[in-house]
Image (cartoon, rainbow, N blue to C red; front, side, top):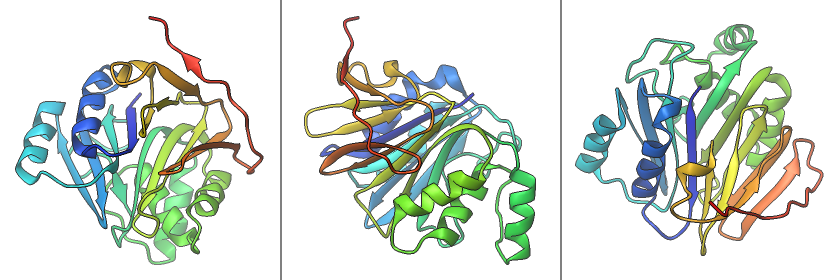
Length: 237
C-alpha cells in the first residue's frame, strides 16, 4: 500500500505535496518523493520517512505550481533512493507515481529491455514511465490509456510530462483515488484526509475511470474515454 498525491493550482506544489504526503504516511513510510514541473520536471526523493524528503526539498526549493508525490511501502524493489517514486523514463520528460502492483511487470520489462530501454530501479512503476514515453505521440491522455490497456493488476497512477506542462492524468484501477476541489486549485490523493484541511469538496473516482486535471478544471471519463458525470461529495466531518 502506498500513498499518491497530485496538485495543480497557484501555490508552490512542493509545499502542498509534502503536506499531503505527511497525512498519507500511514500508507507507506519506506521512502517518499515528489516531482514538480516548472518547464522542466524536478524529481526529488529519499529513502525513509517524510522528514528526510523534507530536508532534500528544503535544500533545493524546486519552483512550480503543478506536481505529483508518493510515499512508499516497498513491494517490487527494496527501500532505497533509486526505488523511491516518482519514476521517469530515460529522458526525464515523463514522470509517474503509482499505488498497487503491475502483475505482468516482468514480461513488460523484458519487452522494453529488448527494444533498448534502460532501467535504473527494480520497481514495476518505472515500467509505466517507459511505456507512456514510448506510446506518446502528442497526446498524454491517449498514451496513458494505451498503457493501462496492457498493464494488468490493481493500481492507481498519476502521470505528468514536460510536453504538456500544466496537465496531470490519473487512472484508478481498484486502488483508491479522490479528487479535491479547491478555490482555483485541484488535488489528487489516495484518501480524503490528505487534503481535508484544504477542501471539503471531493469527487470520488470510481474503478475504471480516468481523471484529467489542468488549469481549466477536472474531467472524468471511463478509461475508454466516455464522459462521466459525478456529483460533488461534501465532507461534513
